[in-house]
Length: 214
Image (cartoon, rainbow, N blue to C red):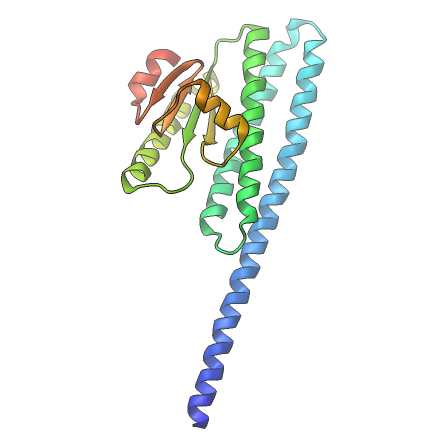
């Protein structure tokens, strides 16, 4: 009996130790994501205020504004990849979903800012917005989204600063995203918007490049 009792106690201790370690790791990931999001908040406000400043001075500063905007785009895209990784590894902290929703709002702000900057300065880059589902995916949808993401990464590598690539999760219950989806009549994912042209379902690099021409 003592042997069984000791084994049972050991099993319980191992179980709870693993549980506590898992919770600690999730909390660590969450704090890391919050830190990155706070950094993005500062970067976004910096970029937004810089853009407001540029609106009040001569257009000769448009190129500097473009470079700042592009640098911010690249930064938040890389941050998004890290947040996606942390979210997939997470099991105990639903707060991480809220951090993802906050990140999507930052991306949406960047998109609107990029549209205004393009119009004001007569830039020729294309805004390429990638809408994807976050939850309740079928196996085919998982494959389609991975395929589309890979195509868009190839496009970004090919076009460089001639496009602004903006990935947005479409099913995080955000009013602004729902309004955009309704406006563009998006019904199938993945979906890609190149400026005001909408593609639904997996879209080839060649087809998108007919618009971006890069």
